[in-house]
Length: 373
Image (cartoon, rainbow, N blue to C red):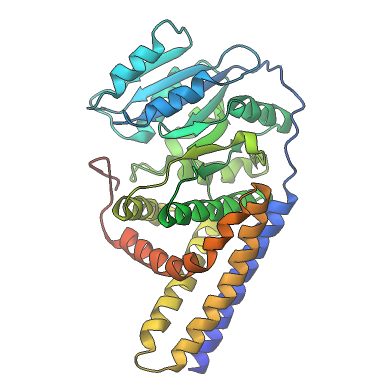
C-alpha cells in the first residue's frame, strides 16, 4: 500500500507541474493588437470536405461576411468523394466568384491528408489558412490571423477552436472540455513546446507546408494537424505561435449524441500510437494515467476501503489543478459561468477519459464510413 501511495503522489506532482506549465505559458502570451491591416501577402483558404451538406451553409455565411483588408483571399474547397448535396451547394456558392475554386480528389486518393495536400499544391497564395467544413467564425477571423502572422514572423500560427454555446448539460460539458483543450494548447505554445494543434484553425507558409508533406505520418488517415506539428517542431520550434485574440476564434457545434462524441474522441486517441514527440507522449500518458488511477482505485475499494482514500486524494488534487487552469482561460473569454458545471464534469471526466483512452488504443476507429488506421 505504501508503494501505491508513493506512486500516486508522484503522478499527482507530475500532473500539477504540467498544469502549472500550461498556466505559465498562457500568461506569457500577449494579447494580439493588430499592427498591420493592409496585407501584401496573398492568402489561400483551404477546406477539405466529405458529406458536409448540413454544415456548409454556416461556413459559407462565415466566408461571405469576412472583412478582409486587401485583395480577397482565394478559397479552395476540396471534395473527398462526397455522396450528398455538398458539391451542388458549393457550386452555387462559387458561381460568379473568381476567387472560389472547387477541386475533386481523384478516385485513387482518399482522406483528409490527401485532400489538403491537393488544395495546397493548387493554391496560389503565399499563406495557407486551414479550417473545417463544420466551422463558423466572426467577420474579422481571417484578417486577424493574417495580421498576427505577418507581425510575428511565424512559420505556423495556431488559432482558438471553441464549441458553440448550446443548451443542455451534455453541450456544456463539451464546451467546458474544449476550453480545457484550448488552455493546454495555448499554454504549451506559450512555453515554446506545443503539444496540440487543431487543423480547424491554423495558418502556415505554403512553401513550408509543401516541403514537409512527405514527412508526415500516412499510416493514420486522420491527424494531419498533429503530425504536421510534430514535424515542424523538429525544425521551426521557435517560429510556431498561438494567437490569443477572441476575433481569431472559430466555433464548431457540440456533438448531439454520446456515441458520436465518444467515436470522435477515440479517433483522436487512435492516432497517438504514431506520435514520436516526447512532450506530446509524456503529456498524453500522464493525463491518461491520472484519470485511469481514479477509476481503478474506486473499483479496488470493493476489496479494500483504503483505496477510496487514495482515489479521493488524487481526485481532489487533480480537480484543484484543473480548476485554476480553466478559470484563467474562461475569464479571458467571459465564460466563467461554465464553472457551474465544473464539479459534475470532474466526476464524469475521469470515466470518459479512461473509456476513450483504452477504446481508442484497442478498437478500430472510423470517420465517415472509413477506417482511420
